[in-house]
Image (cartoon, rainbow, N blue to C red; front, side, top):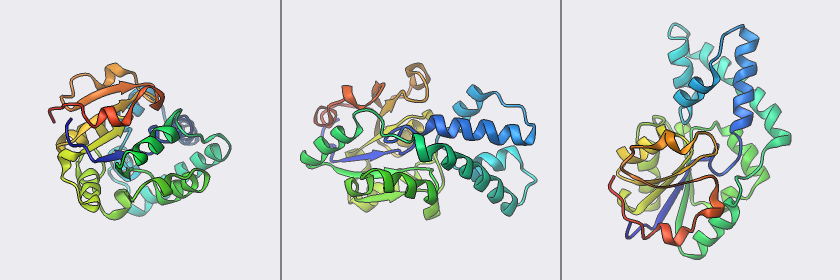
Length: 223
C-alpha cells in the first residue's frame, strides 16, 4: 500500500486488551435481566458497534433514555472489571513508537464511551501517541459505517487511501473498506477466519509484535 501516512487504531481489543472485560460485563448484564446469551454470536455481531446501536436492535421499543440507562449499567460493570485487569495489547507501545519515529500520523477511532476512553488514557499514554480521537460521541455513526475513519482522515489532513486501519472486528474492517482504506486485523477477539474475504485486508496478527509499521506502509491493497 504505497504512500500510507496515517494509522487509524481502534481502541478496544486493538490497542487495549479490554474485550475480556467487555465480555464479562455483557454476560453479567444479561444475567441480571435473566436474558439468554449466545456469547459467541453476540460478540461476533456487535464488536465495533456503539451501545446505543446494539441496544436499539435488542429493545426497539425502548426510549433513548431507557437505552442510555441500560448502556450506563453495562459500562459501569465493564469499568469494575477493567480497573484491575486492563492492559495494552502485546507490542502495541513499541509498534506505535516505531510508527511515530517513522513519521506516521496517528488517530484513535473507537466506539468506546468517553468514560471508558478516559480510564484507558489515564492508565496508558495513548492520548500522547495520537493527534485525534474520533468516536460516536462526535455525532458520527458507528462501524460498519465509514464515518469515524473518514473524519479521522479529514482531521489528519490525509486522503483516505493514505490511511491504514487497525481493527479487531469484522465490522471495523468493513468500515475501513467503505472508507477506501486498507486494514490490518488483530485476532485478539476473533480468529483470522472471521476476516476472510475482505479485499482491503493486508494482514492478520495475534498482536503487534509480529507487525512492522514501516513495512505496512509499503503494502499494496485494493479497498
